[in-house]
Image 1: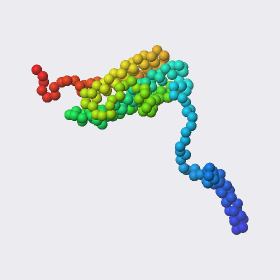
Image 2: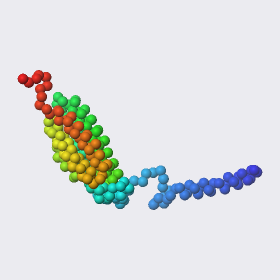
Image 3: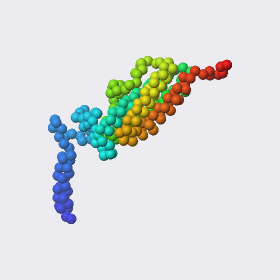
Image 4: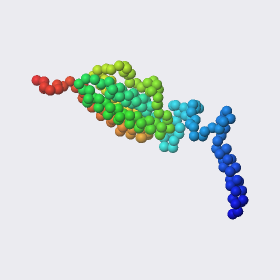
Amino acid sequence: MPRSSRTSASVRRVPRQANATATRAKPAANGAARDEAAPIIHQRGREIQAFGTIARIPIGLSEKVCKQSVGALNQVLADTMTLRDMYKKHHWQVAGHTFYSLHLLYDKHFEEQAELVDTIAERIQLLGGLAIAMAPDVAETTKIERPPKGREEVPVQISRILEAHELICTEARRFAEQASDAGDDGTNDLLVSDVLRLNEMQAWFIAEHVVDEPLVRASN
């Protein structure tokens, strides 16, 4: 190709590149080009699903059954989140000669409850509902008594935990029967296999710490 032709072709390509750049760089409100790599922040909008409603998912359950199960599971979820956080509070604040063993046990139970929280929340979403999530909403919903901000003695910590476990176990049995009667076998299985069995096991481990038995010398 002659030199003049190559120069001409090169000149023709430049405007096309410039046009492409101009298309990508959209003007901002003040007339300056907006950087498309910059995050768009401070956004607000309408809710795409209201809390308490059901977005129908084709899983073979009626909207009525899903709504009933979601309501029950949200109650269990709020109480489970409260118990989870109580375990972490006591993990931080435990004191006394059982500090080491309880410090470790409280944290182990916290992690197990945290995993359970996610399992319950995912079941709620699977049913087409919305899982309760924010701390103020959990505080409004839970049935577990709120502990003080300050540190309490170990027997009081354990009593609070055991009362919370018993409340959740009672809920799980009642809601599991309700789900079974409604034909929601998935929710029934979660409440029995996950919620009930974990809380029964943890209650046993915790309860044994407040049995009044001698430590180094047997009583006669």
